[in-house]
Length: 287
Image (cartoon, rainbow, N blue to C red; front, top):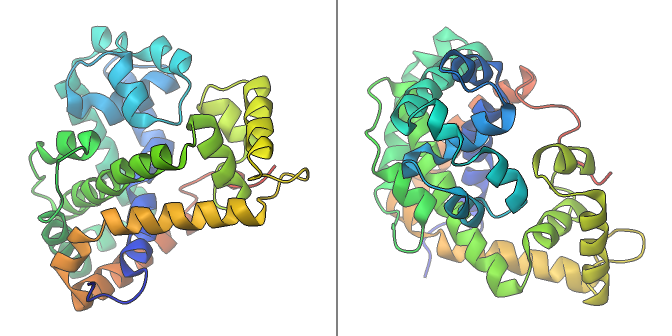
């Protein structure tokens, strides 16, 4: 039985997740990765997110990142490790996080008491995360916690984000949604990536997306106009509910008051990041 208000953990995650993700859209990451020789955008993304694993091959990244076409992953991994070792990439990523948060939030916020408090709360929540069957979380949990509060906060947000994400993949498998279908149903729910960005970053072709839509229509999940059917809406709702159930431990550990305060702080940071242009305006959409 939960001691938290309904969907409290999910709401907290909704602000922590974009704060983690800002770095992947940041010119600071592009610059820091280029400085170590990684100049291709895809290599910078896959390398920076997968470096916690060590020099793994394309199979491990395809499996744990889920929504990306295997051919796209194989174009960049493991070749990226020939240019820069994982530990070099991790150091570049942390420098990029520092620059990104300072640019989006300002030095005063980065050095504020609120940031230090958010770091302490997020790290406390992450104490209750489990590595069992959560490979991306487990890999990042083995990394040292940065000393600077804003970097420690980002690290903790990463742990909480990947912990929930690993559980979400289990829910997708249980629902029988393959990578393309998961992207398309998320998009149709109004919260997922636009088709433009799917094509640009996930590696699937227009034909593969169209075939995925046809499979979803065949299951009665997607209507002819591209909207989710009642059954499709129900499936997405249950997916999120099941993900919530698998992600309860860190927020229960933090407690209702702690979750409310972490959410308040993360919301303020995320709002400022969005206002500062952390993400492309057309990233999310049904078109």
